[in-house]
Length: 226
Image (cartoon, rainbow, N blue to C red):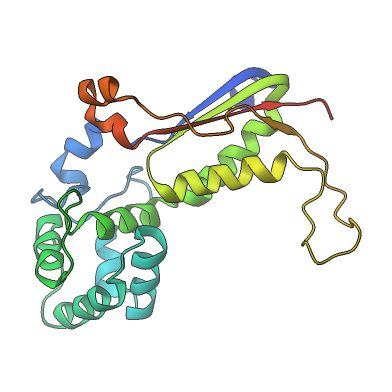
């Protein structure tokens, strides 16, 4: 995309992985478990698979994997099995219907996180291929940066941040061979220098002004000459 717009080499790239507030507020997009809109969750309407397709047709073991892997949901198996039983009688058509159902299934409760949050997060990630797109974005950013240019990434949940952290660590090392190998055979050379040894987070004053900043994590690297 950058090269299509005449940007072959740049001095800086910022990836803000936050969601669109406009899309979240639109009930017809189905992102919120409090909305009566269709169970959609597509950021791009041209995508083929919706959250409703996943919930109503994927096998129980795939639902369990999505909830556990993308939502880090501790009750993934129980929720997936309950969904399969319920959809056999009546499919899930709206976001609030699924939200209420998950509320009824969940046994563990948190004061800070809604019971349906992790399930909805996992479905959104699966529908939009968010982690695959993030990986492609990181690779592309590294390619178009000038030596000395910096890449900054703001992530908002642990899966994104873990992927970014692992990418930065890998690309800042000369060798990425498994540790059991006696000598390097990968030929990998470091292309990045980590600038933020520890991720930067919003302080209490900023979080008070903008509550959505509470979960934001900023990591920065600098491209080095090859």
